[in-house]
Length: 441
Ligand SMILES: Cc1ncc(COP(=O)(O)O)c(C=O)c1O
Image 1: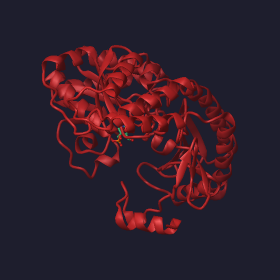
Image 2: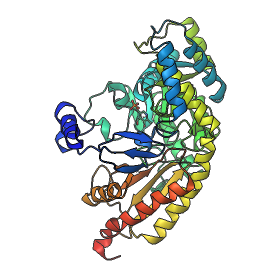
Image 3: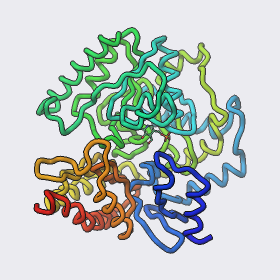
Image 4: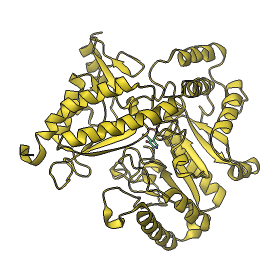
């Protein structure tokens, strides 16, 4: 099969997500290794987004591939009601490394399934129905998860009732305040008002991305997570941290909520749990919630709950993450990324600025010196598409979101590779500079 035959068959026989398939131009990928993707015709691209911010340990690690083979040779699948070595070992390992009193895990196959089951768990545990979340959020594409999601992906899905969105902190709207303390205080005052209007006794939980991902890579202001935790505790509202994207070392800590020095009641995860080698998600429950489900039926189930092949893969991927000190590397490389953001902002008028924490990064592109985005909220700009094409031509794949582009390489990236990636970005930015103030910077 030639590269073109492969592309044509994919487009003819399969649907592409979040797209009109007729307008999709898929990247032809044959194999992947470390931080690189390889095409059938010998092309090589640096994977500057870890695919969907998920291949945290890098592609095709031999130890994980061997573990998958060993697990497949031994046991691939059993009913969810069984006990297996992989389940016992992964459950114990997670209880040891996930912070605080989160010691019990329900296994799923994805981020959305994890959030769906967390929704069920908080409603059953609290006896309350409503759920709060942020407008700038994404929590998955199932019906309830899209109702939980605040970004425009929710708009064409008539999800179930009971979900209420609020504005979370955002770095560019200084009307909320000039300092972290002021922004935090005002947001929490506003949130408390909403809680009172919605009725504290009706609210089961608030779901947050501990550090917002696709909606802007937004680390919350200093003190916000602690203040939020205290406010929710005051009303008996549970805190669920969605760490599907920000977890498993991406931000330079195992989980992003550790940056705010808090522990949620529930943490949901997927992606980096297996580094996407095999699908797996999990809902981590704190001891009081887990104890509740010792005596009360947990009303959730999946054919592939605790699938042995997935669990064995997760164990191996976690071992690589820890043994190769990739979380520490993410923290160290995050500093290199930040200085590259500063360098690019000083050189290119189109670069408004970048944010990163660990290797969780994003750069915003401006169209004028007033700082307006080249592609404001929920719009596209042809120059951003041309920029992505130039990156690919020069050997770098990443994600474009409206007027921003993502910088989320695998956590195994070296300083030299990171600088090589930014050199490719540096070159392509001239296409965006050409748009700045109509080409007259
Ligand atoms: C924060 C967050 N939650 C949930 C999800 C949904 O995960 P999945 O696509 O595995 O269902 C995503 C996916 O990108 C995510 O970023």
